[in-house]
Length: 194
Image 1 (tube, rainbow, N blue to C red):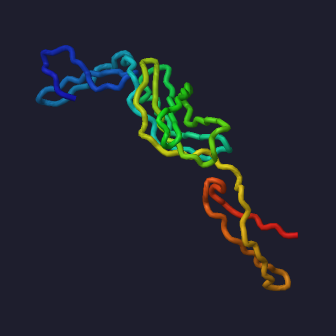
Image 2 (image 1 turned 90 degrees about the vertical axis):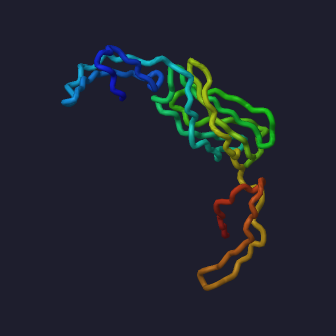
Image 3 (image 1 turned 120 degrees about the horizontal axis):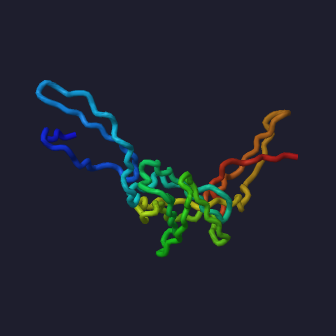
């Protein structure tokens, strides 16, 4: 902190965070050195303000068919700037012009799930998450792309064939299912025999 003239008996402390409790001490100094600090002042909380830090790591995906799952990293308490803190979740199908807006009132929340039967599997959505408190709405994150939930594959593998390789083993092969919106991301196959 800057040194204050010895004849001055008050100072304005700036660049403090909103809605945070502070206590202050004063230290006298001269050409010989610095003395002992005063006793701490009483705790004083700064006034609330609109939050200015948006959530980070906006992502999501997964979930069930007809769901859009949106996740984010919560804003820490010291950056909430006031009471009544919550999140504003905004999303729209990629290429659309109008946003859907939802309010998540829980401070600890880091996830929002939108359910709608009209959502097709693996549809891309533009998503942004903002913050608010009793003082008003704050900053929104930048836009992230999140995909809606998948459905089970609607297509069977083609070209299945079996080749006997020994008295106790058969090699089974098939053509992989190409990725598309009907099949989703194929994570694995199950081979059944009878």
